Length: 287
Image (cartoon, rainbow, N blue to C red; front, side, top):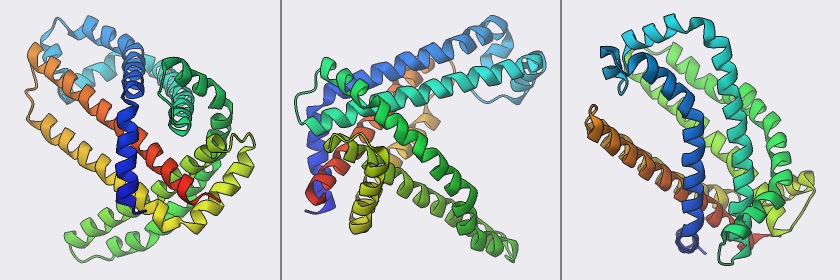
């Protein structure tokens, strides 16, 4: 079966699970409101009734300077405030991924009860996968990316003009993204193996996923990149439209919010498509 056929099957699977996408969007929206509310009320209190408040919608270095000067003593506390939501976001993501893959693997009509049951069932296993992924990402960022970037850094350093530097920089960025996509794809298949085989041993699942990808690497990676191109195209459209939206006024704020939520919905849809396509490929070629 071609990758395009697998993606087509994935699209049909995602369409049958539209309710799950709506739940994920609502959870994402609620999480964002909870995290952003303290900062919003802080800025609105100090700048909402002054001319400085007019710049809140756009990047304004004078406004940023005022913020930094006034709240410089609070930066350590703000750093902790940022760290806690980041950790919560990771935990919520791990929790929800269990529900997504669990419901897709079940092939049944997705109910809210079944979704959260799968979230809880797979949370412990997926959290161990997350812990396993940490040293791998450290190795990738700390070693492999630097190794891959070395030839491009030499090229840029010895370049005679500006254009070779730009090309080398873009190629280095592209190689970094491709390398990270392989790592992300691998851990997706670790999770899929755990769900499909109802496994509990993460290391055994990691070995099985490595064996699977080793046999079907280009097939699996090509599928991942095809869905990734859809994500890139969606992001490009979002940025292009955002740049032409009006920047001030209540109507502009409402329009910007609606457009942002549409992008978040599309991003969630593509995320579910990633899992659906990978799950289909795994079932076709699993050992």
